[in-house]
Image (cartoon, rainbow, N blue to C red; front, side):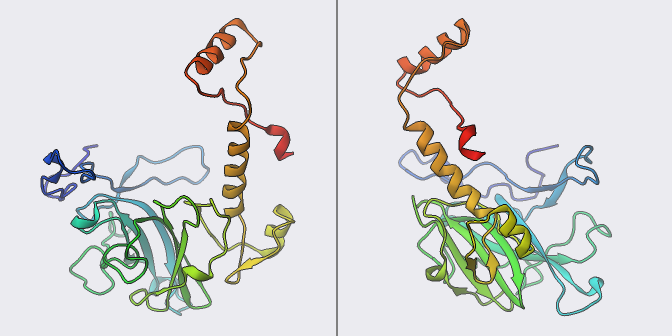
Length: 270
């Protein structure tokens, strides 16, 4: 499959990547969202382009909007993605778009802006160009609907801590910044937040009994815990393995370069 379809716009860098004096250059790749289907997670269909707005985009997250109807055919899909281009070209932000409930009748689906049906996606709702965290480069959207309110969690990925942010909306057009209310592990980022039965979450994470905006904190705690474990591993003294001659040579190579051999703390997770 080609990396860029003719007439699809590609990365739209405007040639700024050729400026040798630029510290931050445009992304000249052409990221798009692909789709592969499976019914058993053993065999998969060939990946096909699912969403391609004519600009480089990544981190797609999709949620179904029933629009208050019991008939699924009257609903729609809402897709949130990151515009991967640099801010001065309109990117490093989160943009939503919608598609019909039936994703098979026409493929790829016809995605449309919520405010202008002639555009493939809506103007930014978080990050540069929006009113929500406009000074932060953002990515990793995770979208869900709770009691009629849309919640968009995302990363302020250039920060070292307190990366998670939150915006809420009732119409997917007007968004309110509620980042100040978010409570997450300091180093957690780029995770997926989803609704799950409370009993299952508490069984899996018995010590995490607090709630976040009515949504049980579930897998997001794995991210913070993993980061803490990795930090513990990498702070241990450098040592060479004696399991085999070849392993020892490899680890000594790490030591000579001033780096640490990988050690996974399995005992910490039992």
